[in-house]
Length: 178
Image (cartoon, rainbow, N blue to C red; front, top):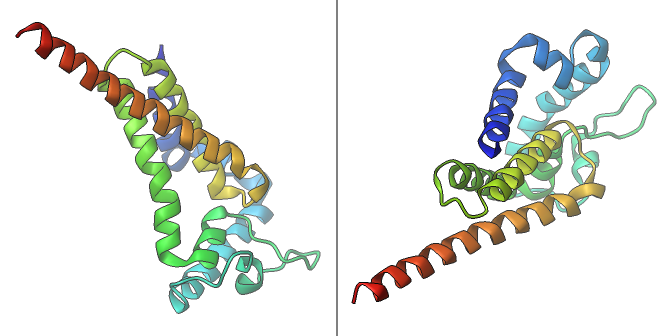
C-alpha cells in the first residue's frame, strides 16, 4: 500500500509538469492567468537579482529586493523559491531545498528498497514532504514552515532508526554465528 502512495505521488509530481490537465488543475491554467502571469513575471525578475547578489540580501528582504507589486499596489512574492533565493542567496537556496530533497529521496528509496520496518511511515513522510515542497513552489507563506521542519525531522528520525535497527540486526546475526 505504501508503494502505491509513493508511486502515485511520483506520477502526480511528474504529471504536474508534463500533462496539461494535471498542470492546469494544480499549477493553474486559463482561470488563473493573472496569478500565473504574476508568478512568471516574478521569476523573470528573480534570476537577475539572484545573480546580482548571490549571497542574499538578508532575512525578510525578498519583497523589497524583488520589487514586484500586485495590481492593488502591494509588495508580493508568490514562491518560496524566490523568497529563499533573494533572502539567503544561491547557497541558502541549495541548502534549504537540498536538505528536503535529500530526505525525500532517502524516504522513497527506503520505502521501496529498505527493510520492512517502518516502510509505511517512511513512505508517508516522504510523500508529505514532497507535497509540501511542491506547495512551496507556488506559495511563499512562512507561517506554516513549522510543519515543514517537523516533517523533515520526522523523516530524518525514522531513517536513522531504520539504519540503527539494521546495524543491531547485523550484530545479532554476527554474534549468533560465533
